Image (cartoon, rainbow, N blue to C red):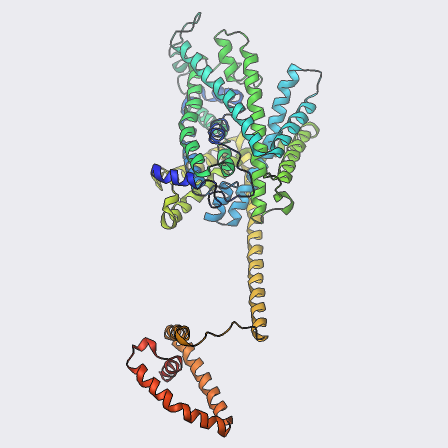
Length: 580
């Protein structure tokens, strides 16, 4: 789409059409969206969880992250296309509802809400462990409660507060990664003092590039796919920005390649500098970044990265509370949830914010009370939800693109590359990941639990869809019944006056009779019969008046005979149709 089109969208960015969620605020600026797009995907999983993936896949983790990164870029492009065409706080849930059906929007939306709420609890626990290490006298649960309260209040006040927190959180995360990549490249090039460049020894030695074969690559691929979760937040936030269309278009375009560099570049640096057999890599208390910096002999590397991970966890908590509240509010606004969650005050769905925060804190309590049962059950349920959401995004874009091209091509500000081929490739890749999860014992249980939740939500969504259809049908019947009562009571609209207006009305009725001759014939017969009955009951005075009017009618008929057939009077036309 041309730059002119984008500018036009920007000019209308604050209009009701451009901002369908008009009751929400619009306090987010372009700088907020850009940093949310970048920082939303960079979570603690990259800093900590990547170590176990490297230990399983070896140097081939670079390929695993490149493959999953390509898939994520396709998903982000598809989502960006739909979000730019129709900015909505419900994001992919709204798109799935329009393209596939209400049941799809219900399933994708509530499964994502469930994922975010559980994730809020997990991130709160992770941040509390780090804070407890700094201040051992304060219990972990107290830190979790403090963080929950902080971000709940932040999101209750205004969307601008959320945007400012995320802007600075994302800036710190991105700054840390850029600094890490700079130090790593310097060490690989032999520029870093007191450090010998490793060359390719860590990439080709210790079993080669694929030390654990295809199985190791599969484990690394599965770990890397779920490390990219969070890209959806920017499309949710776009609905509350000053210029939704331009904002999401620019954010999506600039974020994709930077995310690829951050993730794939980080894996390349770590795999080159640290042997994949290093026993410290799978240690969740350290993480791959800390292990790499310690291998380079940098002082206080562990504490520095602890601060970065702590910030990443707080950022994720803030973003997930925001995303969960907006998704719940959008679902309720579409009649797919309890109405109390949809109440908006001061441009903020405050009931949804508080409910999402409380649900997250309950998950934290479950981790202390029932760590081996209920909490483990929750973790298994959310294991593959993000992949289910991506599947709905791809399926919705596949259908929505055709509709946009046919009805509103000017809205395609962001276009999916090589449509529909890359969309089909993305769907096939997601299906392949599902198959790989079913093959691996560690992820098979997660797939089953996530599949169970998805099926349950789909059934509920379908039942709700049918119920809403029945209610709509009943409402239509009630409306028709009320109109019929008005007709019986004689509350009819005034008949058209004579003259030109009457002639036009008669011509319109005549055209309708031509389109439906059977109905016109029946009408004409009924009117003829009524006229005969009335004539038989007329008095002698009425007959004389009719006789006096006959010459005038004959004169009008002769004048009308010279006019086109379309001007034939209603009664003559109906009689002709009746005879036919």
